[in-house]
Length: 466
Length: 148
Image 1 (cartoon, rainbow over the protein chains, first blue to last red):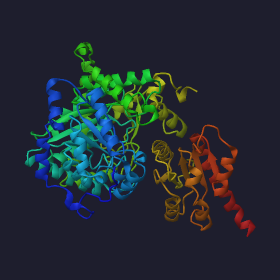
Image 2 (cartoon, rainbow over the protein chains, first blue to last red; image 1 turned 60 degrees about the vertical axis):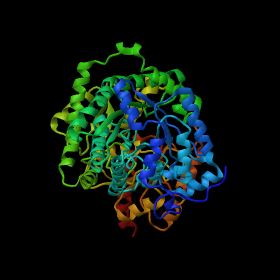
Image 3 (cartoon, rainbow over the protein chains, first blue to last red; image 1 turned 45 degrees about the horizontal axis):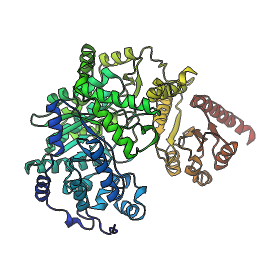
């Protein structure tokens, strides 16, 4: 492959004028002869099945194409992924380009901006499924422009969810403004007849995220996206591991959409299969993958992002990725109609989740300028996420699993919860071994919660039983 | 805490380390015990610890966590910061301090050589360690007038 010496991109970077106008990209996407991601999601929901999607991304262009083709040949996922490398995520395009030319295998994803939109189109044309870009950029404007020019119809991220878990020192005002620009272009594209699916990253730090935190952040990002003109929003939620809680959280997504979003915005629930510490043994890992897929089915998710039996060891090989997709898709079987959740408990849990989300988001949405209100609320801890990588969230919230394994609040920090919610949480945590803020027991208790599945499968001993 | 006296510590994770969980839990636990915690969070270079010390000369300790086994490398600027008088309070390091499951006592010596005062294996040791450092310092202060 010839080396690349230019950088296609935005104004200010070399080759800025090489990107085609939006209307040309819209025509190109129409000519591709494949559905958009938004169409695939709508069709899956109408058909009552869960669309399946892997995570995947490698540095080299031919390698990326080969990876996607093999995944498509072997497992026919409904949507395919281009996971982007960390240099590109942080707009270090020159470094991504150097690595690409020297040792593409060192990149932990596909550097789309460095490859350029023509190669993006080449990838798009080599598979039949629509593509989504998954990354982690607080400012993804250049990446988004190249993605649209590549004919890619789904783009993950948001001004909160792609900042706080990934960056230490990017002010929220900056990331929110950058994502507002992305969402505004989605609005322009909708005007030209192309609906881009904007997936929000409700998984956040992926460690013991209480459902009402994940969903509250997504509601705020969704409200901003809808105001900017986005017409298809995927709200992703990370599997906690507790069946009732997870099914309730997924079913809360359309309820919250009806409450907080204008009609005419299509909202999909997406489940991320368990994002925490995975069991090591293949059989145990596959149990967890299938369990996640059943949760997505019961929760009415439009889409499931899959894991593999190699999750405990790092980025999976193609074979494992294929097996993970195939296994997850088995949960779509018509034979499994007998699998039910306890509807009464799900309804009760759902009501609590919706109330908690309302407590968190409504004061922010009542303020005149939502973006400013979000940044101010995080500074004061009225909005918060656990275990933030960023200094712009206080992380006063401490999560804890209750006796059944559902994720509750051990500390609600400065969240504007009423007494009823606080009491409910502390009642649920009675008997969960939480004995106040003693450093040692707090750490061992939380370590056990984080290692929930390896200990459940007896691959690991509980620390507090020693 | 026995006194209503203000106690402030500076907390952070070593420069190459992005493990946020233990960091936030220790901050939460210390605050619950009445400490003010200046938490610099993950991926904190020595320079940022030094700046925090200059902003908070009353800090009674700098507490540095490391879980990825690279703490020696991450603290290579500590001797210079010590020498320049930018970090004068005790430095406590804890976590998983070297790569591999077998620990070499020489690793601990190397950390002491860099200017680390105290190395903790278990987070439960943190509060007693802080109390002990404080009573040492109080004792030093009481001895001073006699010595001068």
